[in-house]
View 1 (tube, helix red, strand yellow):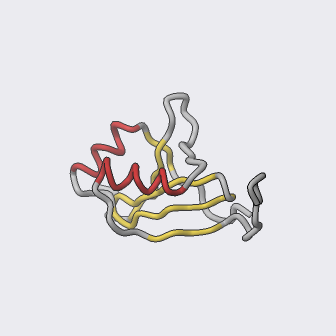
View 2 (view 1 turned 90 degrees about the horizontal axis):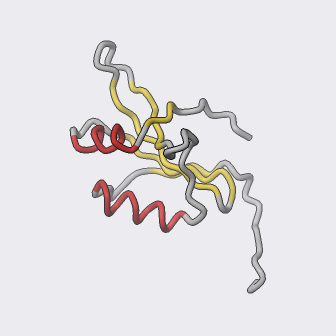
View 3 (view 1 turned 120 degrees about the horizontal axis):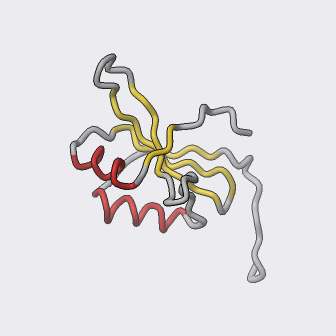
Amino acid sequence: MRNRPVPTGIALQNVDGAFEAGQAVNIRIIGESPKSWMFTFDVADPVTGKPQEFTLLTQRGQVRYWSDPRNLLQFLADRYGVAEGSFILLGGGEHEEGESG
């Protein structure tokens, strides 16, 4: 299902820097499954001006995923003041039921 190119993962301090400098644009929230959500954003290459796609890495060097998209939205709003973006659902639309139905 992953037909999209994999974004370049970067550390939190670099993500912070991109947002603080106003370079982070085209923010996307991507749902890979009902409990696997990430965000990406573009930053223009300083030489070519071509957009490059980035995402957040954990301290262990893995892509940072959220199990609940509400928490991801809250993180983006609180930390970076993100108020709009787009979303992409890659999970195939399968419904996952919990014990409460």
